[in-house]
Amino acid sequence: MEMMVKNVREIGSLKAAKEQVNKLNENMNGSKVSLTNEERIGIRTIGSSRMGLVQIIDQLATQFNGKLSKEDNAEELSKRLEALHALRAYRLSVTTLLEAIDDTDKALSRDIMKHADKFSDSLNSARKHDGDLDEGMRAIDSYNSRFANAMKEEDDAPSNIGATSDVK
Image (cartoon, rainbow, N blue to C red):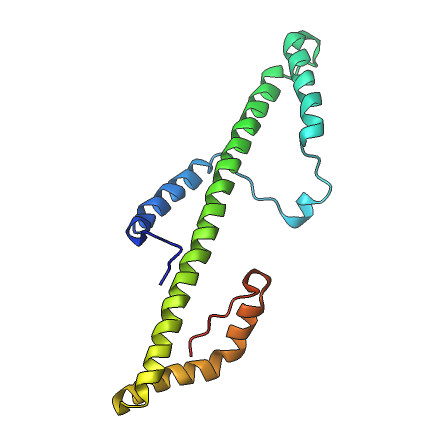
């Protein structure tokens, strides 16, 4: 049986990796913000079209710091701009990791369903000749009768179109 995840042993290190990610998340504690839905509406952010403008303003404000009002400090803008660049690089790395985790999750789930389908088929064939197995298989029959609609909804989800795995 062809598996998508070739080396499951490597995946065993995920507990340590999760702890590392948790520590990275803790590193954000001093500066992370959680916006409410209301705060998100209408907020002006720096997209690629505004980045050039902000960089020019930063250069000029740094060069002519004395021309700013007394309570303004050009270093504050520079520091925040530098932090934004670092944060966006961090987000790109996390996004790449998240995509890899999502793809591996789907592939591993597919591998598991291939096993479950194959084993279920074998056990269903063998149950005809084994009363004890037939009794044990009633747990699968019961599960399928209780969760058939939920499993159908999962199979019909956009990410699963074309999937035909169902434990029988």
